[in-house]
Structures are given as C-alpha cells and as structure tokens.
Length: 403
Image (cartoon, rainbow, N blue to C red; front, side, top):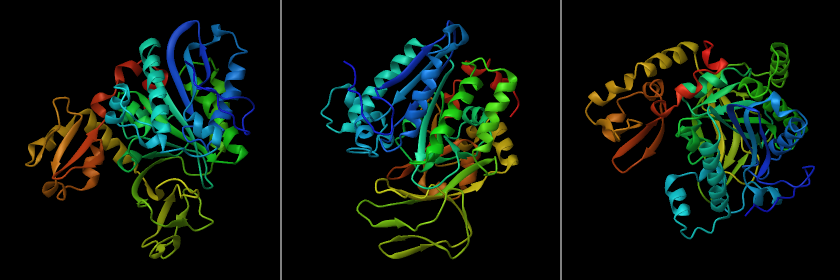
C-alpha cells in the first residue's frame, strides 16, 4: 500500500514518499536524499523534484549505482507545519522502532511516518549496493548561510571535508533521536545539509546545487573535472562563512511549557559581543556572559532548541583526534577506575558520575565520544568509530584523498 501523496502549494506537483528513484546500468554507490522531514521545510523537496526531472531525461548508461529522493513527513508537509504530533527528527530510538515493528499501539502520526521510513531504508540497504550515502536536506527558521551538520565520526568528517562549506560537529551530544543518528550508528555516511531560511527562494537553488555536487562527488553522476569545479564554485559562492570545522559546546533547551522568544535580527554564525541580550524567557532577558558565536537561533513556534553556541575547531585538534581514534586509544580509558565498556562491541563506555568530573570533555571528544545519556549513577558515552563501515568506502575517490 502506497503512502497518500501530500499537497503543498510551494511544490509544483503532488509529493509522494519516493520523489524519485534512478538506477544506472552499472552497480555503484547508493545515494539517498531526504526532504521534508520537517513539514515546514519545502526547499529540499522542491530541489529533489527538479533534480530528478533532469535525471530522468538522461540515459541510465550515464549513471553508476542508484539514487533515491524521499519525502520524510507527508502529513506535516501537506499542512505546512514542522510536525503534527511530535518531531519526526527526535524519535528515532530503538525502543520506539521495536514497538512499532511489534505492532504495538502507537497512534502518533510521526511514529507511523517513522515506521514507513524505516521499512523503506531497510529495503534500500537490503537490495541496493554499497557504499551508501544518506543526506537529510533542511532549512532553518532564521537567516543563514548554507552549512553541514554531522555526527562526529572520522568517516563523516572525511566525506564532508570535500564540500566548501562550514561543517558543524557534535550535534548528537545535544540533539537525540535524529534519523541520521540512527543511520550513522549502523556505520554509514549520514549527515544533514541546511540550505538557507525556510521561505527564501535561494534555499531551493542552494539545495539543488548541493545535490548535483554530491552526485558527482559520490561517483553516481559522470561530471568531468571541470564540471565538478564549477559545481563546487556554486556551493562556495552560496555563503561567506569561513570554510572550517566548528563544534557545538552549548545548547539552550526550552523546557516544556516554558516561555521563550528569540529577539529579532540575529543570524546563524553571528558573533555576539559580551553583555548582549539575545532572547527572552520567563525570567527576563538572556544575556551573553562572553563573546559568543550564535548557531541556529529559533524563529518558529515549534521546536525546543532555542539556540546553540559554536566555536572553531583547530586543525591540530582534528589531526590529533584522527590518529588517536585510529590507534583506538580509547581502550586506555577503561584502565581507569569507574570506566568500563558498555558491551563486548565496545561502541560505548559507562562512566561513574564521580569519575567523569575529573576528565575534561575535550578528552572524550578527541576519542570520539560525544553522545551522553544520563543514567541514575552512570553516564553512557557512545562512539561511532567502531561501527563505521570504512571498508565499503575505501575505493571511493574522495576516500583515497588526504583530508
């Protein structure tokens, strides 16, 4: 049974779950784009419609592998709202998926959308060929230049370093239950691209240019070296932010039912001086205690992440973390009292709360541990390095290049 199509005045036609699917004559990479995970963000869906209209006019002999365009939240997309019952990009937890697979009673609109997406992603992984790339297309509620958001794994870092765009690390430490975090934990390249502000027509153009460049970068589309340089130039010209890696180090989380309003005029990546009022909550103005670089200020009604602070990551830190992870230096951590492996898979460590305060957060970041789930007496710190399917990407041209 197919999903009912969604209608949205911003798109040129009805939108179905699978916006497009193109298969080449030869096997190769499988590239999967998601659009409309949030229903008030149509730019990715429109861009995918445009790209697939052009792809279908090209002979399959030109392609290597497969490419999919998928709509995330059809009911929310038809209503032009972020979500109907709950945020589809905050509920990707194993216990929810297991409950849905067991046909337990879960009436949430987004839970049913998650189940449909899970079945589709599972089918793709079972029938298509590696290497797999999963990219989630988004826009923001405030003014922004395009940027990339990734979970901090070396595989993600290496691939996204090929884009002339800012790359933001560490979102998984503050934002849980995201679709791409679920896919990333399976070991695949998975990241998000934010093409601009929700209603800005330039966000559609940016997303379209990004899709084409990605198809060339993965080897799906046969761009010449000159054409790739031209495609890269379009991405570079879409923003003015320094092309470097950043990390999130603070999140303002809006408590359920609490008042929050971002003050007008702030933009993504903006440097805000000390003593500046940036938002208002139930206690009054929220004022910066030091100079801060603002990230994703919230200018919409739905959503609990008010804003973030980011900072640039020095190249030496990136280099050091790469080699420490390759050497699996995290094995040294379990030699300390109060720290042990969560399981034989060694994808996470359990840390006693009394011990963790003696370790700087940057030490865990160096070794690839970012996601923290607080238990009663322990912190659970997850690491995606050991699950990364590096061998499946080893023959890709981008993978052979030095970062």
